[in-house]
Image (cartoon, rainbow, N blue to C red; front, side):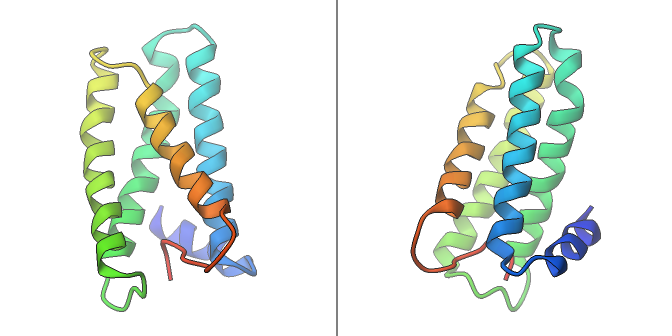
Length: 122
């Protein structure tokens, strides 16, 4: 997954656009699965993909040479840990998927914001 992410990123002019598109795609998958009314089983592919992407983002943020400010990298790694744990709660049926969707939407909004091009993967 990490190599696929890097390959996709290399085709984009701006890494931020790739990250934005990927998070938007995954979030849309989670919303569609939630709204299908098919239950937890329908959520599994989207939850798995979301967990994989957050794992890659965490690894990239923790990598030597990442140019993001240290506090932002630490926040992204912490969010990744939360996503992993909360996803387990959703899979077990103890929590709804909505908080994961909200976190992804916040990241999407941050990536879409005007200003300095502060991508997760630099």
